Amino acid sequence: MAAKDASEDAPTHIAIIMDGNGRWATGRGKPRLFGHRAGANRVREIVEAAPDCGIRYLTLFAFSTENWKRSRAEVAGLMAMFRLYIKREAAELNASGVRVRFVGDRRPLNPGLLGLMERLEQDTERNTRLHLTIALNYGSRDELTQAAVALAVDIAQGRVQANDVTPESLARHLYTDGLPDPDLVIRTSGETRISNFLLWQSAYAEYEFTDVLWPDFSRAHLQEIVLSFAGRERRFGSVLT
Image (cartoon, rainbow, N blue to C red; front, top):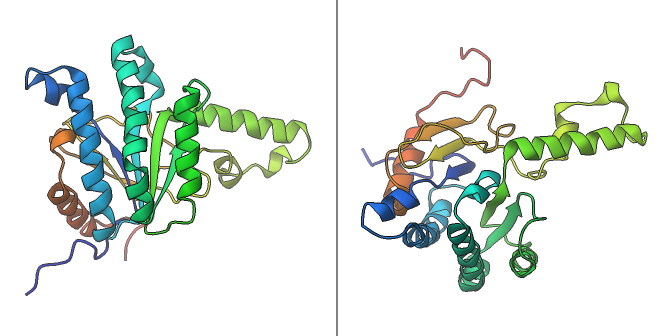
């Protein structure tokens, strides 16, 4: 019997908490930014592998609202790395048919970085091979708070009646409006928490926690997890008959 193709019964949308860059670097006697650069290089491989695995939507957690608590040097290095990554990868992402979107609170970000983000979004907005969403300065509680405020404004201004508020109307105010909810959330590095990532959107997602550190997470690891996902029974609160 032929081996099952990884794209069969693949999750439509995978979200990944890319964790372990710092520990990967420390284990090699290198500074943390060395690990972040290795992790950025790993992003390219996973983005290239995703369509071949049957994945149409890929969301990557790049920088959280809590990550500002790290040292100034590390935060500055990460922001510089984001700018470099966009400049280096923009043409290849567009040529590969990848549509790129950024989600998160953009207000604290450097204008230069914002300009690169917006240009990449505009340049790739017609691409359909893979929908890549990068969560940058993202926190789910912050996202939900801002959505609730926006919905409250709609109610106060008479655009929506309080009795008509639904999960769908709140979701339209989330950063991820227009994207399908993730089917599978992967966290690398052996940690088993979800770190304020897509709390609303992942209500019925499957989770996979792997001990592999992000800079070591390869195409083969992704394929293995996708195949494992195909064997899961997703009930969404019901009972399978």
